[in-house]
Image 1 (cartoon, helix red, strand yellow):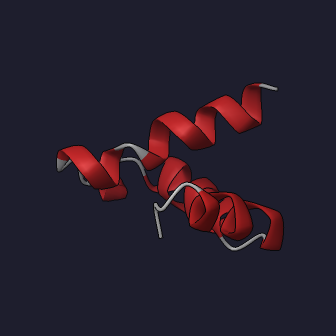
Image 2: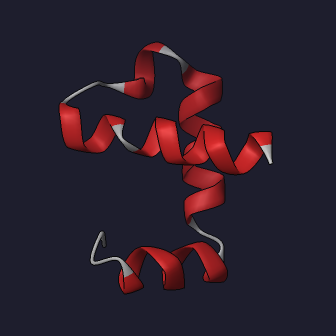
Length: 49
């Protein structure tokens, strides 16, 4: 559950202008999770990608 919540919160950075490159491990985590097919489907369903 913590991973799912971390992804949601870290993905908000895209929408509020926060550059995650200042936190490379968080940026890598977010990018890795965002590539998952189920995550892509959920983002598309929500109109976020």
